Image 1: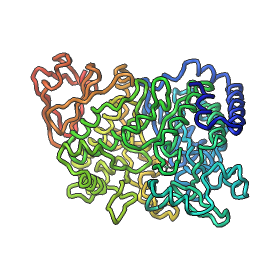
Image 2: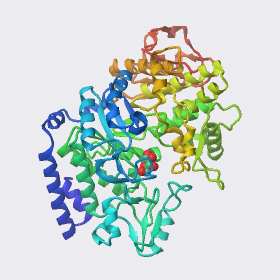
Image 3: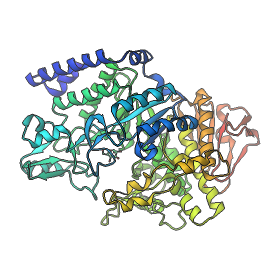
Image 4: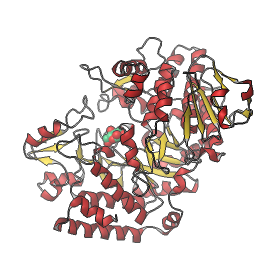
Length: 599
Ligand code: GLC
């Protein structure tokens, strides 16, 4: 279907659609014309670049990383040194004053927030990064705007055209009907999905925080305005748009207002527009939902939606494997074929700016003899650091005292045991914590997809407890893992005797290996193998390489007969260390948390 057909199919064949379609066509033409020459040249290469084994991302808050976009210029070499090839700037467009949900309440899409710099400076940085072979990703918060956005302000002036861009209701009857089927996102800090504004005399849909007003995509004007912003930003040189909170874009009474089929129609149109205007640009979708729903956001071969999606399942399963020293849930879940299209790529990550929510495949849990509710409680308590023997130090997020449900916050290093070990000055525990950190990194770097590092984790930054002193954010424990980059610690990255040096160089070496071998391209799939040892995760890459990872602190033996069937030679070596490994001895020894990449 061409774009026009899709547009009319979604918005109906009527005068309103005619008008909006004409406007959309015009803005697409304008963006095409305005696209700078250099970017047009880049477009000639298409967007297949994201499949390369060279890809490695880092996500960072500009203010926490380098104060602002001017300071960022001095830090670019640090990213290159680690081997980063794309940088994801956490929200940097103009956000509301005060609490802005970490910038996810945008008040102007076309301005850079002044605390970070200017749009000109962003463009400069994008250009400088490009010269270093680093692409730029920005957050595109398209489900909602801040209530301070000019569109929202127009609503407050009583302008009906703008009021139609949001979900507004005269009285509580429709909102309460919606509430019956809608889920809550922040049940503790921002319960319910609607807010009444006396000055407006209306209820507004506010699915996230009260100050984040949900856009109404059933109005083609919203689609057009958002596309206009998207193309304007694309023409500034942005390569990757992280589409925030996409499952919530379409709201319909009587539905959960999540993963609605019409969200997919919107995304397919947006993708088609990218192909027309800026075909080297890609979409990274943020949909932290069940695996069978996540994969739908890749679209199909004919009708693409997002090129890249967050692999939330792998992330959760990594932590699960560390806590339980049992990889069976991960192995079975990852072996499941959800129908990811050949060019759909996962972003593999262990931590990000958000909390960890324990979404498991309950069927597989039950097959393993585990009670899903009890197991979730175990994970919550373990990551919090309350379960006896736990190495993790973290906090609860969105704890519900009635159901005891919660998610968890904390940095990678603290949750891997480093905070506790350093506090105890326990060298052996420090070693174990570092091994855990590197183990998780070894999976995200080698498993098919793009590894994404969360700034600070590459030097083992600990939880930042100072957020509790800030009134604005102390109620949101996600700030525990959003600390400032500690550049003094980063100085130690080349000292292999330091914690920072061991982690940084460990990651760097793995990235170097990854980039040197085409088997790490995202077009080659990773396939889990049952090794008959529940502490060891094993996977091969279409019979070309084999990976073994011990998720326990005790040594483990693996019988090579579990995987030598696919013809790896009897004499192999670990790509990371060069150590020869003989599978014909039939048994391979793995030390505590050891991982090997066999080739
Ligand atoms: C995404 C972000 C999260 C934010 C939410 C609302 O899920 O990752 O940090 O709170 O969107 O914009």
